[in-house]
Length: 270
Length: 306
Image 1 (tube, each protein chain N blue to C red):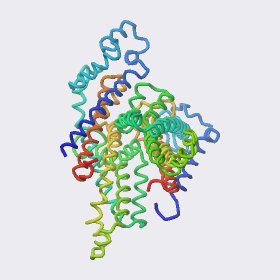
Image 2: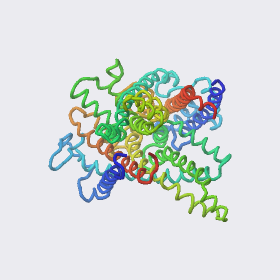
Image 3: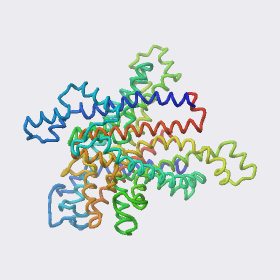
Image 4: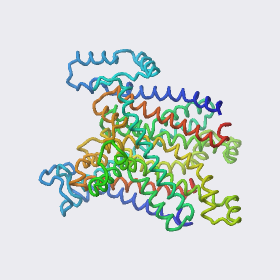
């Protein structure tokens, strides 16, 4: 995108995502502070040696909460993307391979889900299901799978007309062989790009849901609910919103750059 | 054009029905008892039964669904549990505020995106392009829930230039509009840049430059109009993100729109009101999409044929 042959998006994206994942995985080993330990005398304390990112309104260590928030954000996002990818690929794959009436019916169903703008569907489902991580994952996946279904269906429709697929079919390849050896590898690239952007997108969606009070509920630290509770102290303790806000922004940025980089690498999207 | 329009409006009916059905299904079929949620786990069984009867939740699900659709056809969305007012009336009071915010967000997005995308696309690889695209990738990554508070800290609390929250004059609209519009601005700027780069290589551009126009003038007078077509498509595609962004922005800035009404209704377990708000957002999106497509067909006659 910037200079021919080089791929700075990919490099920066990899650095951010790897750093994020290492913090999430090794965080509890590096930081022993309990993210739930209340210490009222330290309420709203600014950054110090013992609390590098300060403390929240209940005196809880912000760095520890941020790291536990990273673990939560990344694992929720990964689970949602995996669930969406499996469901979406199945539905889109069946529609694309079957064609005709089944395809028409399935895609009208997808259109109805896509008629709910942005994260509205996830908000509604999460609100009805109530708090809880499995419920949150279901709500986000119910919204997220349609993107994969559309991509897989579109790729299937175009791939099955390609000469090499027609040749394989003419040679008597069974449907399962066609699917696993000829069609799925062709779909993998665009799906990988979508999943990478999806990881960032779901981090943002989870944060928004938790911010709105229908996602992860306090005291469990999530970047979204940390931002929400920090809002009341914008004037006296802006670090309460800055820290989780930057964490969300940088994570999404990392996955966006990585997605751009992969897309550029495999020559998909311009 | 009339044939196209009637075809599109006819196609709207099954989508609208599907949206209504799915909304009904989410509220009524997803596990979780709204009555228990409203009255609490310790409520007396007689109270629970009374409430259930009052809300009509003791009827068979298909009867409830039929009643829901009949009410909907007459513009009746039921009664709010927490305020005992008609849901349709509550939403109608709040809807203009949501539209105002969404429109302002889109205007901000276009005002930022067009100059930025044009500067970037007229000299790709240059310093201006690099900074514009840097802005674009950051702008699309920064979440509303952080950008909103950030702008509040900078412009309301530190500089004291703009009001913190609420709806009022134009000054109240500035921060919410920027919070909402920045992500869309980033996407549009990027799209315009790519589109301009593609247009630069076309024959009519080469002709214009050969006839003595400067590169930038050729791009402005001949290229831009053609480069805008994909940007208009993307504006249509971004309407969903704009509406759901408006919902979040309303909560951040205590903006009295349908989004804030809905989040309040979720907190109060006011299910008829939640249902009405969800439907309003979805139907608005469906209608905006239709309007975008019709506008597109007006400008590009090729669209009407297929």
